[in-house]
Structures are given as structure tokens and as C-alpha cells.
Image (cartoon, rainbow over all chains, first blue to last red; front, side):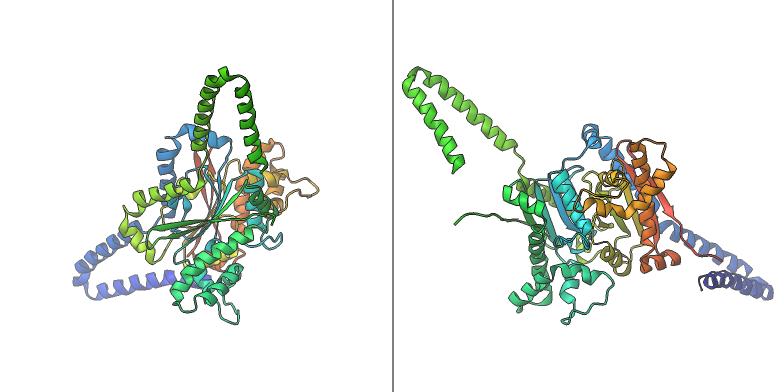
Length: 260
Length: 240
């Protein structure tokens, strides 16, 4: 089928040229006009090709900019970083192209070890199902010894909207997305119960923040996180970036055991 | 309480000494003032994560968010990134810096939720390019290369995660067995990118996009020791 499509494309152009040639052989006086129109068409196609997004150029230009404006301007910093990293933060942020903490919180190279997934979720400890997240947390906490874990949600999150849109009977239509966002199903349940009077958009906004709290709770199911939180070598914080209003909220998760 | 009594004890001890040797009061006072100043400086230098985050956002808001209202106005309505990027969680290699990706340009996945991210990026956002970027001195790749011959692991998660690219390690050990460990790791960083590119094709919607040429797959490697970025294509097609 792919092959037939390619052949059809080629013959469609040949057919068009053949049709034009036939017309001009019958009406030679149209040749001048035809030539001008073909030239114009060619110029338009060239312009379209020129404007067409070139991903290789974009990537090469991006790296050149970084190399000139950062890498070569701060040799001491990059020299140190080439030997190792000692970030103070492990950050969970959404994969959304608009919310990278390197921009939103101005984290520079070396400052934050980052995990990014749909709706910035932290699943509970599961060595089989969620080894990716577990590996990132294990590496950040036990090897890099980060001092702060921050889970950052954001406005108009597609993943949270997807969670809030899952049908009542729990049926899903996606291959991965809905099963992933179900990690924070308890946040949806809480929001639907507490904020049933609000419209869907407001419920989603509340769910964005509640899901952060569910993720913070899930962090504590990792023994090395729990231990760090109890010993106060690790602080757990939640955040929410609202890019509609230009606002960033930050809050602590307090966790401790005290005698009565 | 133990902390409190340790301080109280120390003060009590000093008071007792000064009550017996009054001539030491002046020296003690000077030393206490110096100690207080040193403690203040330490407290001032102690990293304050809340301040760091608040200052970071304030900088972003002033230098980007408020300077480019048209861009952020558009972004508040939706995103249409041209790239889905896979990058390491390493704090030194964020593509927002290394490739200067601005808000809205790249949907980024680091370390988890892979299937959902690919599905969302390809089917919903309709990105045109998927780029998998490895980097120099990658701790995860080093961990992979360090797994013992018998496959036993010592970590709870890390080694089982990096085993995803075990075939890259096997290939490198076979082809480059004469190179030293560091050179083998560097080769594995790039080979693992290729294994990941191949794994991308196991997602039917990625495979379809690659065949129809609506999706391009690329591999990359950022070497921060030498300041070099390599980029390459994965070509995939079916011809008679």
C-alpha cells in the first residue's frame, strides 16, 4: 500500500505535465502565460520549502547558542560540572513543553535532578511497574544525596484533565495515558467529593494541586525517602505553576513521628 | 530536649568559670560576639531552598513571562511543540539549556511514564520529531556497564531500570572489548540511544508515523567534557 501511494504520487505529477504539454501543443499562444505561471509556482514552492520547519537546523542552532552564551562563558562552572553533579533538588515536573523548571524556576545546569512525565506524578513504590521513577528517586536520594524533593503541578494540565475525564465506570480508550494518570485517582475522588459544586475547569485546577499531594504521599512509600524525611535530611515540597496568571505556589509536606 | 540541655549546660559551665575567674569576662565577651557573628554567617550561607525557588520564579517572571506576553498568551491557550525529547534526569543536561529549547518547543520526558508520554505527544500533540539524547559520564550507563557478569543487582530500582538497554552493553562489550571501561561507557551511551530508538518503533503509533514520514526519529549525544553535540537520524522504511 505504501509503495502504491508513492507510485501514484509520481504519476500524478507526470500526468499533470503531460496534460499541460498537450494543451500547449494545441494552443501554442498560451506558452508565454504558462511559462510565467510555472515560474511563479516554482518560486512559491521554494518559499514554502524555505519556511518549512527544519528540526536539524533548530537543534544545531540551539546547541550553538548554548555553547556560546553559557558553556564558553562560564568555564569554571562547566569545568566543575564535568567532574560531577551535586544538585540540591530532585524535581518532578510535567512533560508539558511550557513548564520546564529550567525556565520557570531558573534552575541552572547542576542545580536540579529532574523527572518529567505526564502530570508530574509519583507512583507508589513498585519495583515491577514503576522502576523508572524508583530508579530516579533512588539515585537522587541515595547517590546524589539531594536535600529537597519538589513535585510541581501546573495549570491546564492535559494529564489531569484526562484523569478527571475518565468515565465513571473506569473504562479507558487510550493505550497508556489513562492508566498512567490513574496513579492519582484518589485525588480525583477527593476533588469530586469536596468540590462537586464547582465547574469542570475549577475541579481540574483543584485536582492539579491535590494530585501533587497524592504524589508527595506516594514519595513516602519509598523507604529511603521516608527515612530522609524523618531524619530531616530530606524536605518534601509541593508546587503549582499557573501560567495563565503568572503565579507560582509552594508548600511543605510536614512528616514526622513524635511521642504523645 | 537533649539539644537544649547541651546548650544550657555549656552556658552554665561558662558562667561557673567566670564566677570563679572574673578577669576572664572581657575575653569571654569578645569570643562570644565572634562566635555569634560566625553563626550568623553560616546561617546566611546555608542553602535556603524556599528562597532559591522563589527567587528563581521571580527571575523567570520578570525576564521571560512579562517580557514576552504574546508568546505566553498563546501558550496559555495550548501547546504545539515540534519535538518529543527524551533526556537524562542528570542536572547538567537539560535540553532547555543545552539545545536552548524555549517554552512551548519541546515536550520532555525524563525517567518515567514513557508509554503515556509517547502516546500523548504523538497522537494528541502530533509532534513531528522524536529525539533521544544521551550524554557523557552518564551515571545510569555506568551503572549498566557495572552490573556483574552474573546479572546480580545491588540496587532496589536502578539496575533493573538500566537493564532496558542491556543489549547496548552486550554489543559494546563484544565490539569494543579492547577499550578501557570509560571508553566502553562512552560507546554504550550512544549505543543505548540507538536501542531506545529501536524500542520507539515497538509503539505502533510511532512506527506508523515513521513509515508515513510524519514522524522523524533522531538520536543525540551531549558531551559536556568537550562541549560537543552529535545528532543523527534513524532511517526506517519499507521498500520493495
